[in-house]
Amino acid sequence: MSYGYDLLEFCGEPDIEAYKVLILDALHWVSCPYPLFYYGMGEHLWLHPYHFAYDDFHAPTKRGSGWRSYKGYCYITADPTSDAERKEREPKFKEYMTKVLADPSAPWERLKQDLRARYGPFMDRNIEQLGDGHFCGHLWDVWDLDRRMWEIHFECLDLYSVVLATWRDMAAEMLQLHYTDPLYATLMSGYDNDLFRLNKGLATLATRAMELKLDDAFKLPDEQVMPALEQTAAGKEWLEAFHHFLYEEGFRGQGWRMQNMLEYCTPTWFEKPHLAIADIRRLMAIGGVHAPEMRIERLRKEREEAEKEVLAKIAPADREWFELLMRASQAFTVACEEHNYWCEFRAFSLVRLAALEAGKRMVKSGVLEDPEDVMYLLMPQIVLGAAGRERNAAPIKAAVKRNREEFEYNRTLFDKGEMPMFLGDPSFIPYVVTVDPLLNVQISPQLAKPEEVGATCVGAAGAPGVVEGTARVIMGPHEWGKVQAGDIMVAPLTMATWTPLFSTIKAVVTDHGGMLSHPVIVGREYGIPAVVGTMDATKKIKDGDRIRVDGNLCRVYVLESK
Image (cartoon, rainbow, N blue to C red):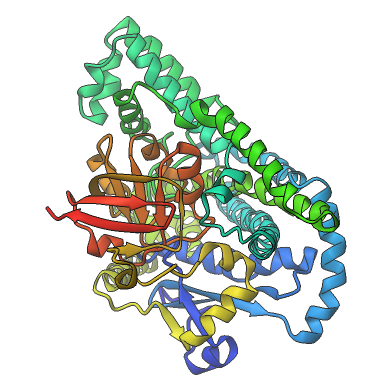
């Protein structure tokens, strides 16, 4: 029972009997989440959002997804439909999808507007001025906002993943066009999105810093850059632009961002603006270039030519349906990157800021030693502490101590190789991935065994291109500072917050991921090769090794070991 929360704890044989197999979610976490985030997943992610979207569009093959926790880690599987359910759902699914295919961008645009409307009141609220009672009400309100965000999150991803999986299979059957083919990448490239526009803002700030000849200030440690800029007129001018970026650009500013995207435990840029300095400095080192902006017109033209080429090969009777599915799949590439910007960035920042305010109040009352200790509590415990403060000090302190010790132990298990990659019978994994469209596009099998093709690692998907260079093994955001221009980044995974690094690296290789994972989409737009889903690149490749990355074949070769 992790952190005293047992609602979705793995039950052994009963769960194996019900689900056959559960797969460790290493695509999103390389360690276990903090107790507060773990509780949020249990209450908001695991219980129903995975089923929420399927109530609307009636996907034939699954009702939703199953989740279980084991030693604080997340395991996922499909909740498939029966044969009878599948027959009943298919007509409803076709009716719903006909509306979606008529305007494939509309569902995500509608969901974005929903999020904007919900976020606004929370962003306007001055929580520091609230009394304890009203503040506890705010905690529950923002917790419910987090729940609604997860519903929207999966309404977007589940809907589009069904479309993409259908079109991918159709392209493979009719054209022998595999998702690792460079032509496939061309068909899915040349699209801007809100996440890229955020990174363009960073590039613009980098360019302006160079124009104002502020290079010396940016050579200082991150925390010292802004104080140094305050000392000159040019520096103050730049800081005004930076303030506009953080608080006004985009929807209510771009400061709604944490280094660890799937957590509440790392500061936002609002709290510590200097966290953005490293990204800006890296962009200054390459001349303030924003690669997608420079490439987008060429990619768009190449995509349009590829579309003509592909559609000409489709039989007239199938062409209209093929094109509708292709357009919807292309819309998914935008939604897939934007959903992090609109869902996780903002919702998790709002939860963090509320939890941290509770922590500050409890520190003031002597209940906690550090406001960040709230990350070891579950939300009911945070409300209890914020409402009662001194009266509830003993149980809150005991919970922090107990949960911290359990968390510190749990987080060592993955690195020690003690967390199984699956629970149950692995022979059912192909079936689970087949019936679950979202898992199908996120978890892909390796294309070959490395020893059979003479490679060090073989991936499951990638972005096209072949390069050689120096490997830089980056195990998490805490090691971003190691990345130098021209490196090949090797990591367990990457997510939306890693995107600025793609401006400076030459290629990316990850242990986890599939055809729709972050490095694949971003690699295509940034023009760098990617190989994802190798399972073991961070173990086989050492920092400083000279390697070759072949994104066309999804293979990686160590050419020279350091």
